[in-house]
Image (tube, rainbow, N blue to C red; front, side, top):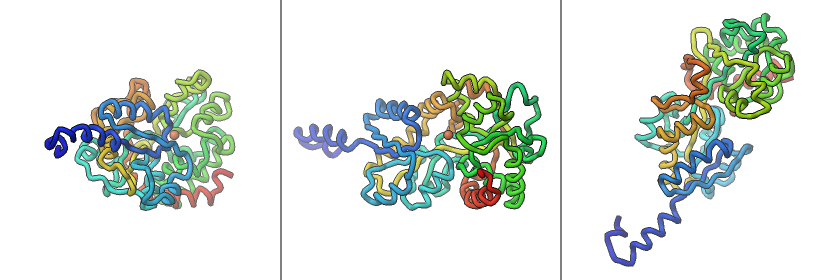
Length: 335
Ligand code: FE
């Protein structure tokens, strides 16, 4: 404004300077094809360029070693455990934004404003259409019942997705209960816990097991892939609940780095990601649940039916993660 109000020579500068300065650098663990449509929409609307580095390993270590010189403004990742790890490493800063507070319900953001959830996902059961009856899958606790002996597949118990579920089990009961549960669940496995959530569905399709644990959006990903669609079509989604609770949900989210060289532009991008427009792109592109109230899930996701999300606090889930990991190792879940 000051530039525009002064001499005739300065307006040129006023145009040139923001073009140089208006960019946001993102370190993302999220897949390129998922986040690019969001960044393209943001750039089209604001003229602010978004540079993305995809980092699937060593995100925290990199931010710590770069310190104040880090070019990153924002970190985008999945799972409350990974969001918490970035925050706990001291490389983020709080963002005070009425827009983010209005768009994102309190349960999906850090009370200290260090991280903000952008989508949620449920950890559910994929059940064989042929071999699992309606009503047979009930609670997460029931998955440890011997009636499931030799019928369950899952990715490793030490993976963040399963540790989130196990941490919630500790919160609903206690550590001793979770240990008994993990022991029972392990005894019911059809095979050693290996691979990802989709490969477990492949195992159901192949007849190796009847049910598996997995995140909801993988159904969408499998259906979009010619080979995997066959696996997806052999199962249906069932929403188990905790006894006296709901279905386990986790988040993907964003945090601003402490070093952020482009704070104002970065906050604009964060706010955009929580907007109706971006939340709709998230819903349609990756079949996750938007966190902003009023933005509908995709038609595909709605077709899986409704469920009651569990109400354990995600910060508590992150807090119990080390205990959950210790117990998973004690019972040699992945052995
Ligand atoms: Fe995933």
